[in-house]
Amino acid sequence: MIRDTMINTANGMIPTSSSSANAQSPGLKTYFKTPEGRYKLHYEKTHPSGLLHYAHGKTVTQVTLAHLKEKPAPSTPTSASSSFSASSGVRSAAARWLGSGNGSRALGFAGGNGGTKSVSGISRIGSLSALSSSNSMTNTNFDGKGTYLIFNVGDAIFISDLNSQDKDPIKSIHFSNSNPVCHAFDQDAKDGHDLLIGLNSGDVFSVSMRQQLQDVGKKLVGAQHYNKDCSVNNSSRCTSIAWVPGGDGAFVVAHADGNMYVYEKNKDGSGDSSFSVIKDQTQFSVAHARYSKSNPIARWHVCQGSINSIAFSFDGAYIATVGRDGYLRVFDYSKEQLVCGGKSYYGALLCCAWSVDGKYVLTGGEDDLVQVWSMEDRKVVAWGEGHNSWVSGVAFDSYWSTPNSDGTGETVMYRFGSVGQDTQLLLWDLEMDEIVVPLRRGPPGGSPTYSTGSQSSHWDNVCPLGTLQSAPSIRDVPKISPLVAHRVHTEPLSGLIFTQESVLTVCREGHIKIWMRPSVAESQSSNSETVLSNSFKDKPLLSGKIGSSSYKQ
Image 1: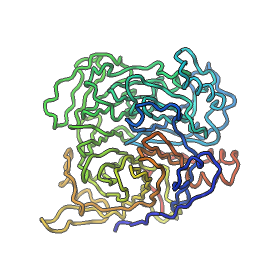
Image 2: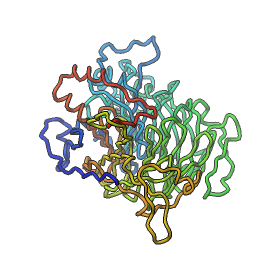
Image 3: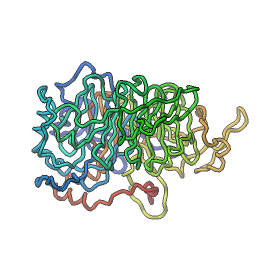
Image 4: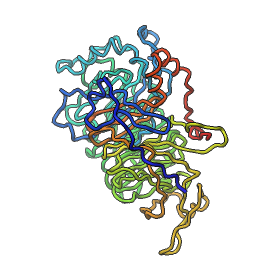
């Protein structure tokens, strides 16, 4: 049977003198309980209150985690004042919502990023001053490493130092003619351009994150411009953007017209980009550029209506899309073929995310449900019921491990989270050995057949490769309940990120909260900063391989 866990509603208020707690609205709690302990609100990030423009509210804030490694150029010495930062030794990758959200990696809290304290004043003055129009001014104190949050509000991109408790960003980048709506960071980029920004106008930019932080102005510097003057798709807005894992500079941009375009950052963004006419708007099709110098190099027509979010599996083999038509579609990226997919219970799907091992895909949308898709079974294997409004962000917690392991056996268990327009963060545990899987329908009017565990051999005939399934019957899909339900913001939420030390939640209006995991929160309350730093050094890193979600229990 399905494990039916109770929703935890026993969260209490705790007194605190921190600035983040003082900013809390009445009724919001500063921690929430899980079986492994309390997650405590550590601090918040937001945009400067004096920089709200008329466009604020027209776009939804998304957030990306960016970890900059040591600057590769040996000729530029790094700051000697850079104390130990846990993030500098921890594997990190990009994460972005509404949608993907599960690609996030670790950060550290043992002080700010190297050189940040001496830099933040200069950077803030330069980035927020109306007079800073020169691109020649550089921030010489920036030492080229650290963990940062990139988020969009109105007509601006803001960058905050995640390792600093300063609430305001250290950098702002403003766009004069359109609003940024999506972004992605590639920590493994082989050259300078590692940050992608997609605009409401359909324009796309690639830039160097390090170069933006070094410059004290408030405009993009050294940017490559794609789809300039709507040369590719007639000004259809960007909806989601992602680097291709291991793609050597390739990236994919999804648009509201149902098309995805594949670009190569090493090619000129203004080359010829004409494609053949789409013959059937209802069918999936791929068209390649006519010339070798063209950029984008391919157009994927995925669906009618908007593609709301895209997410690559961690190995880059598959790409998942969710759209206004309510369908999840999973494609083999290299073969350019549809693998599987299906429809929501009703309404549009808004977000999607992969498990680290590539076995499961989460989706959320307008039916208030969190769907768990099995790649092995090519079918929905569970519905998460617990939100009271649209689900706007989902993510697997690849750093969570089963508490109180006794070593008697091995059970595959997954922890994942979801956020919604009901302002709630929900945490879920998925134990596949206890999920009841419907095998096939009986005769009309009869009851479906069930079996415990994954039974893909029974499902192959029902779910052939490359087909989209209709919306399932409510009785055909097992239901799971959330482990925790906690109201974390006053405004509707738009995304979440799991890191090794925390959970980050973001609302549509651009406010971000960092919730420390129980082990980290306890260490900070009982030990000195030095002891905390040493605990990070000794903490084993999670492997991104297939076995990373298997736990002994």
